[in-house]
Image (cartoon, rainbow, N blue to C red; front, top):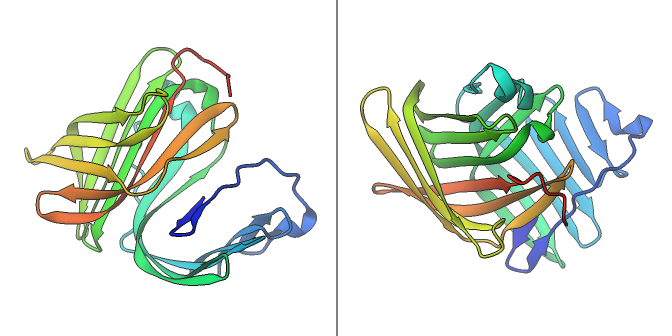
Length: 242
């Protein structure tokens, strides 16, 4: 998904893997329409009709695996990390080239992701600067248990949440969102509260039969202002209607 002033580009598709898709240090698909590579630096490239991008990501801190383990939650994301980063490069749409120099959140997983173990979830992340970022997650599992966990990064310290609550501003289609609020009581006793305000249209991907929404947002935490993603699914009735 790429959103610019020219509009939204969206492609979510399962494509056959070709022998040329995987090389040492890179993986791509659909004749290099999308490629991830690592050569000491993390790079993403997009090459679609009318839309191209060359982006480089530089991590602000070591990757954090803060997911709760055990039960269905462990089945859903057995190996998963998040890390705040700087994003630089270019995006070209409809003949216009935009220079990118901003912040982002990179997540990466290994192994099998069992989406049918999930009834609904919230994944909210925000980055304010190289020393301040956060991640908060709720997972409503198919056995009707709910896992909640999150953390705040301050410099080289990871501060975990003892309590967590995420409120979604749901649209009238009951799937899309326009942001929300993440509130955590940290292990230090501090109450962390981040407010998400949507700045782009929702982007919607069907992932193994589950409708997943991402909304890029302006995020505020006290007097700090940053960027973030408010991601959600709403599949509590195990529906498959498109």
